[in-house]
Image (cartoon, rainbow, N blue to C red; front, side, top):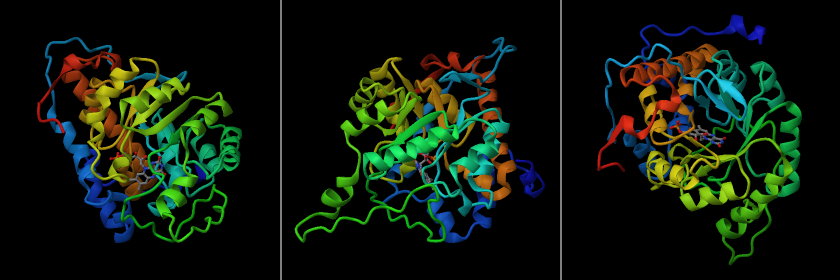
Length: 363
Ligand code: FNR
C-alpha cells in the first residue's frame, strides 16, 4: 500500500461535486477508452433514463430539525461502514490508471467504505485485497460451467473476500461496446473453446445462452458458500422473490448502468416494487445513474439498503488515482450529509418515503 503513496496524482482545483471530475477524466483518457467507459447499449435509452429518473423525486426541506447526532453509518452483513457508498464492480480498471483496482479498493478502505472487485479485474484479486488492507466484496461472473465457477469462487474465498455479488444480467450483450484489446481479465482461465454450431443453430440461444447460468445454477451456487450472496442485475419483482426464496442474502437492483438490454426502465423505477416484494427478507442494493449525494438520499427514500456507484469513481481514478477515488467518495458522502441536514434526517434509517415527493411522470 505504502509504495503507491508517492505516486499519487493530485486533485484538480475547483472540484465541488463528482461530475466536476468528468472533463478531467475525459481529457486524460484516450477517446476509445472514454467511449468504452461512458457507452450504454444500442440507442442508449436506458443509459439516459437512469440519471433522469432521479429528477422526478423531490426533496422536502425540514428546517429547525435537530440533527446534531447525525451520521451516515450503515451495517451490512455484520460490517459497519461509515457511509453507504459502495464502489460497483467495474472491469479492467488499469485502462484508466496504472494502479487500477488496487487504487479504487485502497480509496474505499481509506474512506471506511466498501468496494466490489469485478471478475474482469485487471489485477490479481489477491493483490487488490492486499492493497485494500480489509476484506472486500467479489463480483462473480458465471464461468461457463459449475466446475470452473467453483474454482474461481474458492480462490476468492481463500483470498479473503467476504461477500459475493453474482452478476446475472449480461449473459449476452446488445451493445456496440468494444473492449480495447490492450487488456485481459487476469483472474480468469482462458475460456473453453466455443462449441461449434450447426448451420441452423443460433449463436445466441445455442451458443452464448448454452453457457449462461440458470435458476438451478443459482440454487447450486447458494450451496457452495456460506458467505453473503447477492444477485446483481434484477429488475423484476418476481425474480427478486425467487432470489430470496433460494436463500440468497439480497440483490442489486441494476440495469448495469444501461450497458446491456437497451429499453429497460430506469433502474430507479424498478426499486420500489422490488423493495415491496422483498419486504425486509433480504438486502436490496441499488445502482445505475447515481451522480451525487442527493441521488443517494432518493434511493434510500425508495427503500434501498445501500447503493453502488459506477462511472463517477472511475472519473476520479482516471484523474488522480486512489486520491481521486477517495475524493469522489468523500464528495458523495458530503453531499449526502448536506441533504440529510436540510431534510431533517439524522440517520440513513430515517430516510423514508415520507421525506420525498414523487412526480407522476416518473419513468
Ligand atoms: C460495468 N459494470 C459491471 N458490472 C459487473 O457486475 N461486472 C463488471 O465487470 C462490470 N464492468 C463494467 C464496466 C464499465 C465500464 C461500466 C460502466 C459498468 C456495471 C457496474 O457494476 C454498475 O452496475 C454500473 O456502472 C452502475 O451504473 P453507473 O453508476 O455507472 O451509472
